[in-house]
Length: 313
Length: 297
Image 1 (tube, helix red, strand yellow):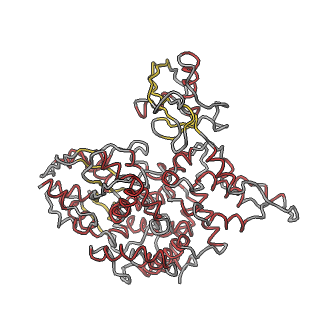
Image 2 (cartoon, chains in turn purple, blue):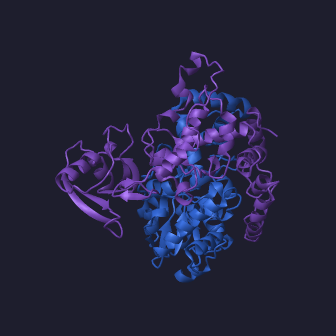
Image 3 (cartoon, helix red, strand yellow):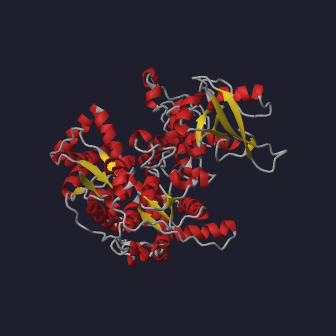
């Protein structure tokens, strides 16, 4: 079938802004977007610029936006994409500075990876039995499956508004080493991740889970890091208290109470508390502050569930 | 058509206008609901951060209660749908997990879940089970003057293996409902993005950045109001909109204010069915809805 690919082109040395160009290719049943781009470059437009190497979803080079989502061009079939969207639009990955066409600067990505100490730190004195390494891939929850394509950072909602955020790939990498039985930097690395731009900047939007071509589920690795942090005693920030106080409120009341949680979360954090008071007053006058000690039916059963998990106050 | 109605904490707490408008709208449509009055929180993805099994037990309790009534669950919150619906899919598929959760649930509450219940958001019920054509028959005041920006939020779309109704890349159900009430859907990038609610208190600047970006974009594209299937998105977009607008003004150096009314899905439907704004609890919003009402009256 003859397929139209609408590709965003941009050469900052010649163009004032990005523009779209349509290319037509004869696509076979199994043709991938990458194969089509290689064909266009060889036969129609030698200036078309993109990164690619392995053609087998291993090297992670050819990440780009295909029909608005972050995808590996070598993993996406033209036919399936046409069936799904009825068109093919291609552009550079989102949230990254463009060098030319689909080629973006990846240094912001690599800087974040470097910031999490992405290697095993060990004095070599602690003996780790071989048995502990037998099912390492399972122990690491597939966090070692990352091919560093950048799909998650490029799709990340939080990074989209706050470029300081370490982002899903780097934090999944942090978990990969945090969970490694040979690593001895557990507390130091976790401490670093408590800083602004660390694990607590994740908004749990699930974009990274959705777009990861290797099912690394970065958001779930971030959640594991949060759980490890609370367990290691980093539990008094407003961020950590969002989890611990939420559990206490629901464990006691059976439901979340939106009046009680903000007060308990910000208890002892005066600046944050002062921020919410004006909104709390406005909400009160709009009938949006539920009575904080409302008895709800079914509370006894819910408390019994929390008690069985050792989470009763 | 009968469902076990799971209101969720927000509709019974800080967003009572959602519960109020749900009851009005489903009543008029003849959809029968049995309210799960002794319901518990779904965990909102927060309880599972502390203890995944605890979150499964809470959701298994809800599902087992609906199963006893032999009814499928109707949710009215995008987050509840993602979390309760997602837990349901895992409990249905993973028998070992279900057995472990059931054992603990039986010991504490006497309940057991056998995996026979479906969890559906009101939005999905209207589009699929009830039908858009049928819904159109109940529209007595078509909102033809309005352009409405759909805001899906995260959990009703992603991860798609936990939701599986709309296409996460290009969802259409909210647009279908907006057209059904006679209004025009606004096309804009923010419709499938995050509202920032989960970090409102701890990382307010990130959340404000998101609210400002999406509401600002919807406004630029001509939206008169936004509609959302999630009361948590509603809280973020409504309660924090003024602050987000100020942040945007500062960053962009404009004096353009953000003043976009945010509607819960059943409020939009209710307006088009002829209910009064008061009956739909629209006075409870922080962003005034009066200019929008004036436009349709």
